[in-house]
Image 1 (cartoon, one colour):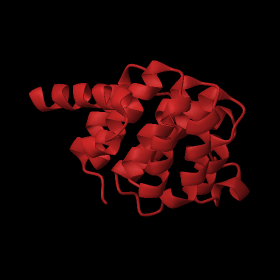
Image 2 (cartoon, rainbow, N blue to C red):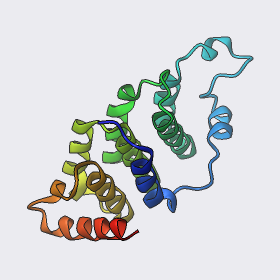
Image 3 (cartoon, rainbow, N blue to C red):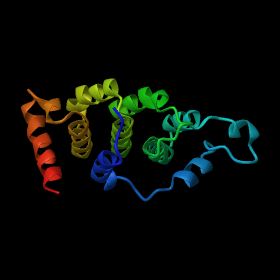
Image 4 (cartoon, rainbow, N blue to C red):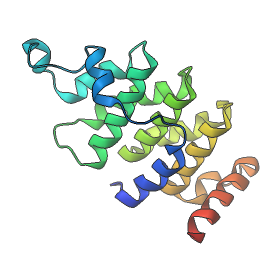
Amino acid sequence: MTITKSAALAVLTAAAAFFPPSMSAQTLVAAQVVPTETDPVRAGDPSDDRVRLALASLDVAVRRAALEETVAAVTASDASFDAASVVPTLVAMYASDTDPQCRIGAVVALHAIGHDPALDEVRALLPQQTDRRVQVVAINALVDHYGIEAFEGATDMAAVAEALLSSRQAK
């Protein structure tokens, strides 16, 4: 399934309130994750390798910037970016990152990639998410990707998902 720009915008809109203004390039360069002209070895790294390293950074600002870069590369259909290579890292980040904004960013990136098995993991891990903002963005992404059927049998989550779907259809 290919993500449309309108679908990506729907999830990004839900997540926008949780991200600070973009500082991707400055943050990644400051953390020496992005190659520079004076660093020929790193300058040869493919962008997905750079992003994978940044997603695993101990610095939360670097992880957030890498998430933004991932979504930007996927929605721009950047052929040099191998989105599938970062999917396991994104799922792990959604499952256990200590920063709720990183968990939200991981969901937004997984939604943009549209990888069904990873989104199935998002659905399976949803009950473990204690931050309501993370839950709302995850539900929004899942409803956008699968439809309300993603929550059949889960009455507590189905009500929230139906409310999200209604509000999107009303716009």
